[in-house]
Image 1 (cartoon, rainbow, N blue to C red):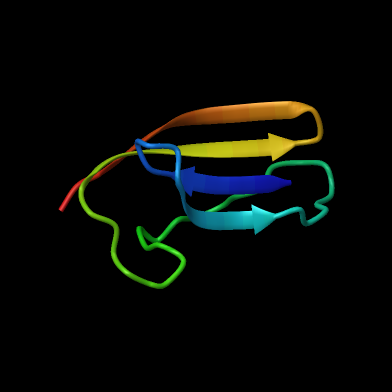
Image 2 (spheres, rainbow, N blue to C red; image 1 turned 90 degrees about the vertical axis):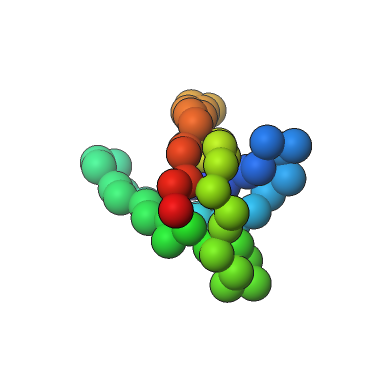
Length: 65
């Protein structure tokens, strides 16, 4: 599974999962609102994208102060 957070320009801000193999079933990923260097993300709109096998899901994430 691959999962990441992207900014409005499509730049990867944080990687939540990097190809780990998971058993079938439900799984939970959490983003703590920080980039890869640990800086707090500015308020605004971001996107998450999760790919598991040939399935892809993406949606908006709104960060508020």
